Length: 353
Image (tube, rainbow, N blue to C red; front, side, top):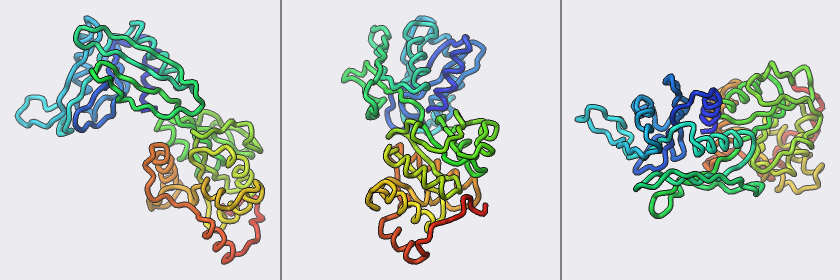
């Protein structure tokens, strides 16, 4: 939902918002999770979505009329009914409650400001009192001060069902170490998810903003110590330079990012892992536990785009706790590869590619 949040904030900043729609309750199955939103502008433009496309047109058409007297809860069945004139759900199989509220109210503005702040890196907890049984809409926004807060479910209603709570987290940050051509589809795909992407390379001829228009920042740096990487971040090391990759690994591993992937052949990766362990004074087991190598889910395919898809998919699975059969190097694998292929270090600064 991060990309949609960006689009909603952009539409709000335009100044002609008319109504905001939020999915606050689901019974049965639904295409979207609670917390999905749709912002409607006065001219009929909208950003975001609250279904798979079956409810949007109806809600956008009626939004202005439905909020004419203030915030309201509307209930839509998404069960397939081939006898109905308008089968909204087209077989989605559930019932959804939508909160519709007019734009311009203090409650609306506070939420939009919170969404904008979350995009800038702040974590915020939002409690919304729903307009049910004659009660008025209210909204409380609090900053989450802990450094790495646990995710709060957006479906945390009170026993009476009158409260909707959610945590607005910052976008996923992805550090891409390496500004080669194969990094470009990684940046593009990550930006489609609304992530904040930072590209870093020591080579100024490659690390140029015009090569990565979707990136939030493109930096020319020899080391990664001042990037403030934390446990929520994801890192992909893919410079094709043995020296740079080793330096990035040694610099990033102590920060314990939630994801650290290393691109390269298994023997090359084994050498890098073993040398990073020596540089850090860590055991091989500790280094292996912190690295995904070979990088990316084993989706098959060939070429930069297929590799980029596998990397972004693995990061997404990692952040959502859905990792299945990720490929990781065990200490025994590292030692076996070095024994088989030799322990001499790669001496080329840049590979043949």
